[in-house]
Image (cartoon, rainbow, N blue to C red; front, side):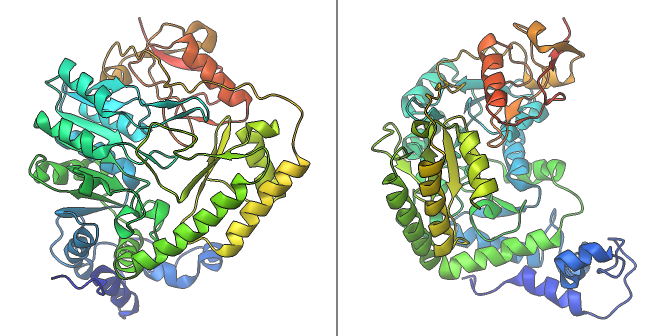
Length: 484
């Protein structure tokens, strides 16, 4: 049995940082000796001694046989997977590899329309054809939740030749659908269930958290260890179980989308984060849940505020209590306005804002004083910044929209395009990804017909203070479309 106290990759990296030798390999700063003094002053010299290349002692990410392999075996046991791969290009590369490993040009994949932009990138890279299904919609909070077993069953009946199903679990708001039922339906067609579990890496370490994707029956899941656990930004994992996915194809796909110069600092942070959770995960998550419950209880008592919960927003199976979404429309504020006030004047920074809501991630790194500041910030917001106006509630772009994918995302991405004023793009085929960020869910994607509803939604988000990303012209004066 693997010893979860061990940190083989971290130990090897530490040994290399203190080994005396003359370095004639990359990176050029040579263990920090040539690094900019201003950067060394900010981050410390020890960090750069650990910024090393693929030395013999450190193993190879693409053909691991030593300390990386040992660290991945330990991670697989900790996260209850059959096999685990470390990712240094974020969960983005894991989602792309999952699609590449299961779908080729012209193959169908069923997925919700509120997928992350990384899934759209996977469609472009693979040439797969998306079969989009609408997730459940919450009109009170204007939030798209999960797909349902019924909608999936209907999609599979119409497209029994689909090669895979991909779903988001949990959503950015912490909402979890009935993944067990979704897995059962998917497997009736003998195809794999791929799960974007970027925000659920902590689920495996406490019984009061939602069921982990693998335990619910997923064949493959991708987790951002950096988002909710203790790894460094960009450090993620891909886990797999069962025999429905060719593991060699996963290996080959990851070689296409990961850097050939992986950061050992990121890799070592995955090793350390795994050890931390394997040894102390239940205790850390118990404390995190306690802090989250305090925040939810106290903020829910502030007049004018409401908190996303199964009681207020029926239609989903579970909610991750460590994810806090607060609706501020009864204060006469948009989420974007509330975010700016909290950040710039009250010292509280949210994960992201939408037209009506603010969403906060409460994790193992938060403290009781953080929660006190969060609650106090909302009290001041409600007392001093309430406005006598009605916020016109929007309607989330995934609600009852018809998605007209005229050509595959890959075809549209590589097709000849032209740039037009936005008012001239209606009914044309989009040639770029256009999405508010965060959360990075595209409103328009290559191959999709541009509708007036989509344009109105994007312009509303921008007018209210949201940021539009992915497109060449972030001001939304123009859009790229496929040439006729």
